[in-house]
Length: 472
Image 1 (tube, rainbow, N blue to C red):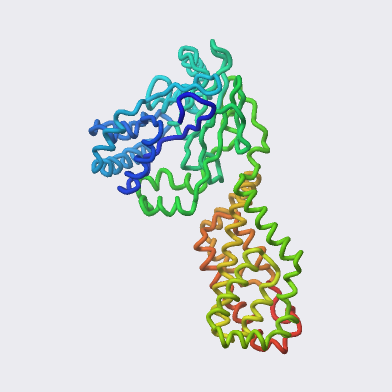
Image 2 (image 1 turned 135 degrees about the vertical axis):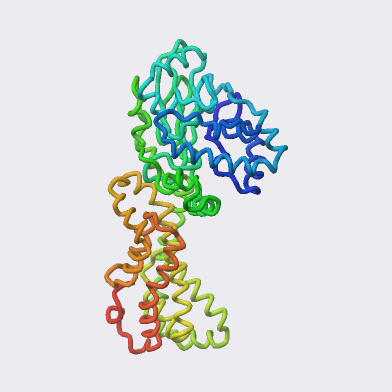
């Protein structure tokens, strides 16, 4: 983060679960290339064991079990850090606070609060119950904004200070969800111009102070977390539920739960705005589908066309069996990943050209890969918006999917009345894992795949799709 400039982004601690030696070294080397601050975890692992546990200085409302888990996490992290004395030395000399100037504002960057490295005066609980204490800290500091991170839940609160309006903003966590049914972290952004991605924020003088989402690969993150911290481990007991589905905390609570003068909300549309990458992916998919229909490529995926070209296609397959297999496989994946309504015809054609055994293998794997790509597209484009809008109403469904998700998907794949395309897109906004979606879907679709491919071996007798199944 720049000490003086027009833009800054502030995140929370980067160490907490970082017990893998290679990851510990890589993350710390990367962070130390930038302006960084020392938090309580860095302080504890940089020095000798002081007996302070994780150094979090938890307040009374945090239970003993959670405190003990945090101390055990720190013990394991200390063991990893012990192999890197040079890095520990560099962490030990990091500053504990920083004053930056952004767009004419003085920004006090602290880990805990203005008094303590692990203080809780800027937590949403303290701001709700004792806002006058934070007000006094602002008054005596000479800063316009205190940006902090230590206390895990985000909050933003406006105060009157000697210098004028002032803010306290806490981003919560950058690498974990901060709100119920979300899967992104938060960073505090302070800049001269607003971001289209901001979930909420306020203008202060010439600057905007905002919370922007930190998006990460959820599947990869939780898989890595589970490898390092399996079920029953202290981090799994304390944090896995939050990583999976967020804390019991809503976006609206980031300022409504605090007393004093509540901050005016940012426009709610910001939380629903697609990111630039989402817009690019959506535009690409729409463009491909539009081009498919504009160029009338569907004429080549009709039963009549395959019948008229069957002899030529079979001759090509006999001369080039491997190339023919890859071509049909690739076409099938494109058709299913774009949710085009030609999968059934492709299955019949592949059965006619390759026979039952080889045709079943091609269709089974191509349909599963294509379905998974459609599932991932739906997840990337729509899941966050759906969860932001309907998160509370989806909790019962999510709970069922967490327990019986594979069974539900298997049943849906077996029921012909539920279209293949609909299952792919709907499951994308659920919490089911990608690998589970793939393998359960492949097994569940296998009976219908065999029926279609077998029907294709007798393509000349097939008059329409309605007599086979109505699922694709």
